[in-house]
Image (tube, rainbow, N blue to C red):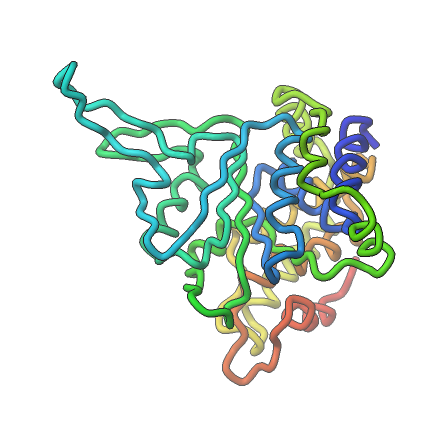
Length: 304
């Protein structure tokens, strides 16, 4: 394993206790230049994970609290008339950072949610006819409360498809929870975090993703998964080509994190629920609900 990656995982896992698989998936998203959606109950560490990950990677961080009265200009920024110069000057919004925490994204209206679409896809924003580039690297971590909670707006399919992965943190294991209860406040520990890499080193790791080999047989497997999702009766519509690229890229990132220069079938299978489940809408006849249930029918696809 790359020592920088190993140090990043160790530092984040020292604060986010008992969630090593989720930490590795979050880091895989960063290495893949993708975006991460964390869906879970309040109080399980979603926001803290975003803070710790940004601090560990030495990236500039902004938090945007999504509420029902949030406007697109509150995210992107706006041009303000200044009397002294008699000109309009652009004041950038919080989107101009390397890591954006879109906290409780589904509490904002669809109009405000859509302000992130261009930023997440193109790494730029267009405001009043002018296009402005966002920092590199650029990474969105969005937290989402369960849809049954009061005051939430469902994310549209176009928004969900922008997220490379969706993960859940869940309640901690008893041993980890005991450490939380007996130890220091996790947020106080943020002050002790030392970045383990510079942005240039992170960009170099992101470029290495494409050097990880994936065999033709595994590409056949990914295509078979995509075809299955489009033809199976369990889903209203299948996975898009973008989802297929995301699946391959995430598997490569997981292989790099594990210290391998090639992808194995287990890499694809491990990231599949997190890459595919939020992109698939079960058909009306289907009883599939959780991420594991939604991707369970994919077992019918032969593994190379």
